[in-house]
Length: 345
Image (cartoon, rainbow, N blue to C red):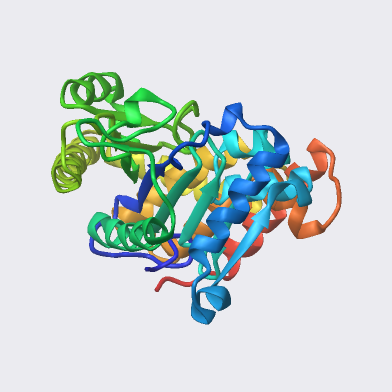
């Protein structure tokens, strides 16, 4: 699978990434929140033993123990969508197994004992599911999962019972946002068992007009049905966004172009940029790129900036603790450099 940050899937401009997550628990072992540190780390060892079954796997994957990482390192993994906030909140007893391409992350002792996550570029739900299913089969060969013949896979949260599958697609939806259509979309999605969340999933606010659409129902539906339904919904949302963009362009062509070029101008010249302002401006530039208005910026650069302008990423680049003002200064400097030297692909 392709890393969503460094790869641009041109098949569908509006889709940034597709993610698959499988929730699993070990039979006869209390859920993670009921385990102390010692037992939690025993669970980690057991899952490692079940996973690292060949030299090839050991060469491609590495376990990261969160209790060995500092807070900035943990936040950086979150900003790259490799782990969840819940994993960080219990860092004394959590870990994750990561591959070298950063497309597979197996979280251990999050809400469930195992959360297999595969994330790839573009609208590629089937590819992400195929790989997560293979990893799931490998683990199940060596572990006994908590499973009920009627209910399916047993999980800490009842909403995950059944397949334990959460599929999500990250999209850029600026026109629907500008036209105040997001609330209507949210209600429509809820009626068909889907939900829409912000950039970092559950509990996060939408920033930069980037949203994640995912399934809410896991019980009573097969994996294939979930993926098929989600893909159909995503394609419908994409069509609605394109219609909305066309309407904006028809009614407010000059105003829209002015907004897009002003955003690019600010990003190429600003001395200070906070993360929220930067994300909003990058959204306008992304819209310009997607609509063919801007031709000297590519989406790989925009994906890179989406992650690397975040607070932990900025601090990592300069390898020291920065004040808020220093982060804003270095964020603006990074954006100026990235956009100044970039050429379209």
